[in-house]
Image 1 (cartoon, rainbow, N blue to C red):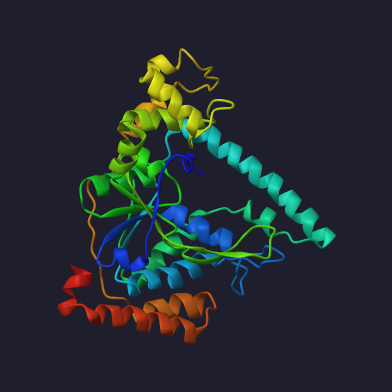
Image 2: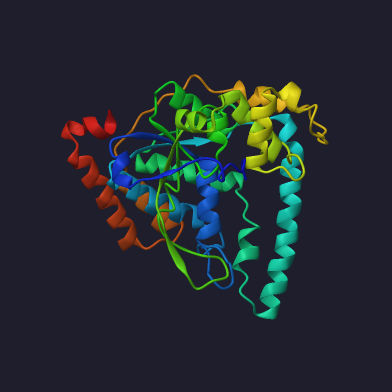
Length: 338
């Protein structure tokens, strides 16, 4: 879910072409959740499934939308979550309870014959099998991926800081708290989006956010940005009651440090705020990774997507043509494989 900073962070709308030739570290779990949430029947909320009943919404998004990024000259590197910090346990349990409640509401809406997608989307779950299947598809497509030591967004930020990638990509703002130089939002959901409960669509474009720009505009430092996150709520704490981003920013400017701010708010969490604060500033990361782009394996893609998961061979072959044509645009493959 991430930290809610949208009200105070300025964002620049860009076109995908802006990212052509750039390496982008994508928060894989966040990305797959988007596909699992969005790619559903608009009325019943059922996800896409193959003939064996296995959910394939994530594979559909990963194949078709990632190929669009590649066609645009973007070089994606997917980063999967590693072991979550111990203090995230309560958040994970809380989310599971919320999903179970949403599942009951989903069933009730279906029984009443109502549009049930909003409840269905709230039940979205990314399983270990889905993650492994996603990695198999990425292997076949020749797209690199790695597993973080802990949080994927922290790893993306680390790679961006090291300049091994040009941007982090996620819907959440946590990447900024982890220190990512640049964050791209809406990377994989660009296009038309339906407004919930309305028969209205809006255009969604990628948004670029620069950390230095954010800090300069807000007149704070990164440590204070993390404090704002703690006050409004993160993946590890609920935040302080009745404090939103603007109030949090005001408190940070008045009191400067976490120690001083805690004298003026009531911290009700079981976890020590210093623990979360230090985790954002010094997260565990995987420093031994290798980014290698490979040629797409046509036979492997068809076998996995068409033979095993019942995707249209015609559509899959069009994607493969797209991947191969992009490869062909690069002189001696240096642009793609380099």
